[in-house]
Length: 173
Image (cartoon, rainbow, N blue to C red; front, side, top):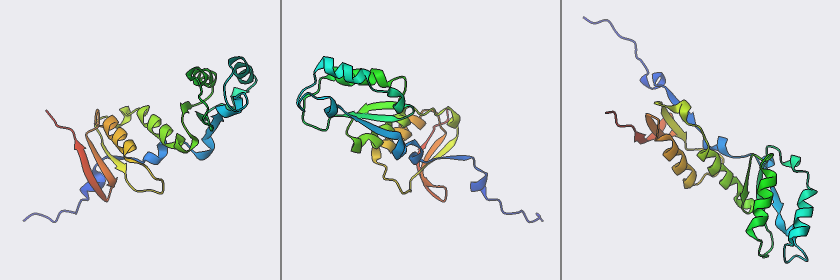
């Protein structure tokens, strides 16, 4: 007769790492904007000399560790070089910069942060991508994280540890 074996919770013994996509969002105070409209001559056009002079007077240290969205709040046609000039000045200071409206900045920086995320830590592991939360996350972010993780994880699940949906399982040769 076999002795009674204790009940083992196999789920708690499985090593599963959790990723919450909210961690990739910049905080609200990390996002700042530069409105090119403030540099326009008579609100209509950008004069190169005036623009370069105004840019040279900006203390770009105020953008240290910030996510900067560069945009024009008017319908003026802004030459592409203006965005390039600002990007070059921001490069030593800002975490990132994007040409986008302020209302789109959070989503753009979320996606860029996912794309630059180093997944080596998750090599060969099971990963749950958290699916519930207070912040609205669109499908592009989930697509990007799955694409990034699938290259080197053992399995990807979506949801919570108590009720996850299998997304991907690496085929073992």
